[in-house]
Length: 284
Ligand SMILES: NC(=O)c1ccc[n+]([C@@H]2O[C@H](COP(=O)([O-])OP(=O)(O)OC[C@H]3O[C@@H](n4cnc5c(N)ncnc54)[C@H](OP(=O)(O)O)[C@@H]3O)[C@@H](O)[C@H]2O)c1
Image (cartoon, rainbow, N blue to C red):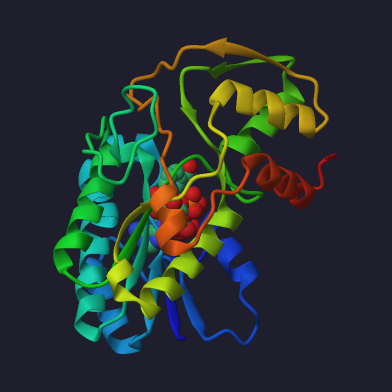
């Protein structure tokens, strides 16, 4: 299988490279070779490379950046995946694309199913939803995997930022009203590759799926558990979510379809966290 991946240096891109053997027939492109702010160039790359399957893990994921420059976020998260999907449809290659639970408005306390109606609260969620819609409109085989709270040993994410603060401060405030589950980039990278194989084998599996670890947990309780497992002794204070950018509070995802159709089970996030802490050389 020849595989073309957009998003070489992101959390998921890095972990995907770790999973590929040295002889794996895949090409991973970073921003230097494939800038998603130039959607036509990304489509041209697909047309020239003619891969069997394409995975897109590149995206603007910074809510502040997306709020400041929504046009840019729309280009990268909305237009580019749509043009990629059109190019994929033309050569008959499925597209696997990572999206977010933040396409939902976060109301209620039950997990969102793939059939629920999205209603993003902020610019980032809106741009990701536009990307999803453009992929579906392109008409080719695709798997859209929505997820949440992606964590890894690389770069800035909830876990690495938490550990930095917990090592320096004695008490930190963490929202207790956001409920979801941390999903390891390593597990997500693997899920994207398995989805690619499944949809390549059977294009009728094309559709929108949810992939999230289990069990669901509040952000503050996840923080407590991570701090304890890392052997740190910082107190976590429950607070309400605040800030200029509205955030969906309930981003629990129901993942039954993903298990029955794609054969992907939701991993336990505590296991994923242990692996990441091992990667970081923390006590576990
Ligand atoms: N992180 C989360 O909590 C979270 C939650 C839900 C869904 N997701 C989704 O999961 C996927 C992977 O996210 P992640 O956590 O791995 O994010 P990440 O670590 O920020 O990686 C995103 C990658 O996208 C690249 N990128 C950004 N703008 C680009 C552009 N104009 N052209 C080319 N590449 C560009 C970045 O390149 P540079 O390295 O050059 O900046 C980075 O390598 C994304 O689709 C994201 O929306 C993430």
